[in-house]
Image (cartoon, rainbow, N blue to C red; front, side, top):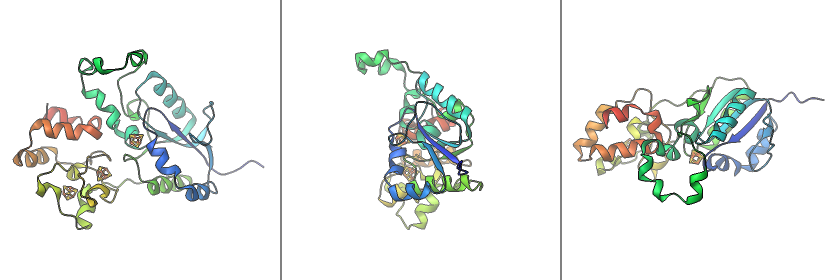
Length: 253
Ligand code: SF4
Ligand code: SF4
Ligand code: SF4
């Protein structure tokens, strides 16, 4: 008898595979999930050369080569719903930093054989195809992934956390790192990670991307008032989410 369970595929293009690994390590929950869905494809576990039709596709990684673009477009064609999984897919993340660096400044450092690899301008997946939902973060929280799979399969509407990281950080009674003269991107970054970095006294680097209503000029003014240069601020903001924050380049050329 044909299964009536929704079909789900996990796919990966350029990235470190950390998004999928963060999820894979929870074997018990994956087994529980298979009671609800049929997993058609999952790198490292159940891969097939053919990209099959699925109800929901999760795509990890950014587009950095013509092959990535091809795979992504094929997955988009075969999926009813496409979810960007993790910061590389969402913002282009650290690998997308190349977008901001003139090739002349790093070409001499590349291994000879790497010159033969065909690359294209690195970019988040929504630069190439329509994306229906995003699970942000580098890596994303595994509970968030599981919750999204379950909700998508139950045809429930998915919602992203929209408040900045500072809301969760203050709720956790953390001492504010800005008061210690450290660049923390919590005020302009979308939360939902329970301020995991600042809980451990590390600065937020903005891996979940900018909030929709951030006040960038006010944040820059605050940091400049603390003695940081435009360059310090620019470099920090573009590290994880520069491509989702084009205003940064206007305000901090
Ligand atoms: S978002 Fe982070 S963990 Fe996921 S593939 Fe990119 S670099 Fe790796
Ligand atoms: S430490 Fe960072 S996230 Fe926490 S309140 Fe201060 S600016 Fe916001
Ligand atoms: S605190 Fe910032 S850098 Fe850390 S996980 Fe949350 S959004 Fe990402």
